[in-house]
Length: 536
Image (cartoon, rainbow, N blue to C red):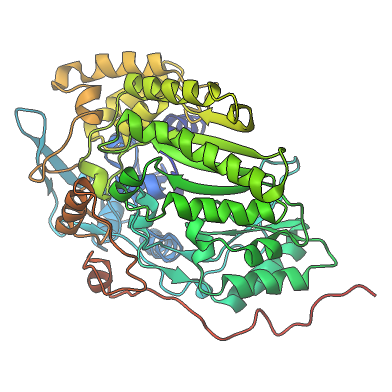
């Protein structure tokens, strides 16, 4: 009945067409009949599904748990009634809920300069704007109790448990943090139950406590200690994704490594200079980072990974070259506090891609050539340092995949022809370096976009103005466009904004519009009313 696709990245669009073809489903929605499944898209990349509007029947934006059940109920009722009105009637019923976007029920009109004039419904009863779904009580919606266990060893060989959803740190580049507002914490007892049932069902020896900023959970210390105590004899390891510099403490780190191996720590300053961190609202100073790594190195860690981005708005060569200065300070401090020369720091850099529903949705993207040139200068500076260079690892992605991702992330329906052309030319697994072909994408884009009067640069390196209608403006993430624009202006002024969990509301629009609110602890509960597991 339904062919569901969840997109975490836009580079999976060609794989979508491959999957449709393998399933025997017509690639384009207009060619499907009453017996074909409804092709339903979700995931973060579905917050702008316009580039794949030709290929999907509908999209759900936001949390999927409740939405999936609502969609299922509508389809079940339609089938029970004898499928009245055919496919069109079913899609109309879904669209009228206000929470399912059906691209075929909207027409896009363009201005002579290529910009969008407006997006308008072409059926009565179809909403002008489609709202995202928000699950407020995560404990009511636990993960599958019996996760699939692969037959082969995987990269992330662990059980993953989401401990909270949403983030209000306000990093301006972060689409995930913006579109998942408000913060909703899973209770400490809910986490304990999920871990207990999941380990019994899978046999994994490591648990990943996942979220956008896991150390920000108000009871993370109790969660980590409680789990480490309970599974001490079973040697079940705990892990967090990259940790915020200002949320790290050695007690938490020791609990996370008590039952497992002491691997490297990952921190994400994102920007190399103090100035650029103000632009992106990453409120972490270099001194904060040095104090944190000093604590880590002084307590036995020998490896730290630092993650940055290149191509951020207003960025200069100097902003990027300061990454090398930061890395040398890290190595120097590590050698000082540990008394050892066996200290490593890995610098990992990704290219910045402006995303919809963020303050940077109007920003120009740095070209692939400029990105590569800037990273080359940074690599030369690191390798040219005789004293510290050998202790600093350097990993980076060239600028070409970022341009394609940027093309698709802020694109409109005119890109459907590009995606299909790339697919027909053999494009698959574009998120994997060994399969990605920049030349293929550019050649197909040049040919497919030629009749439209716009090109790749128009979608990527061009700055947008406030008055421009953006392809996703009719999809409501809850964030007021005026607030996003004001935050974009604050970025250009290098003005920082606090986390609204602990400060007065900044009127981003999410909470009053969806009748939601940030949910944080502490709850005062213990992990679980269970005794610590001990062997006989």
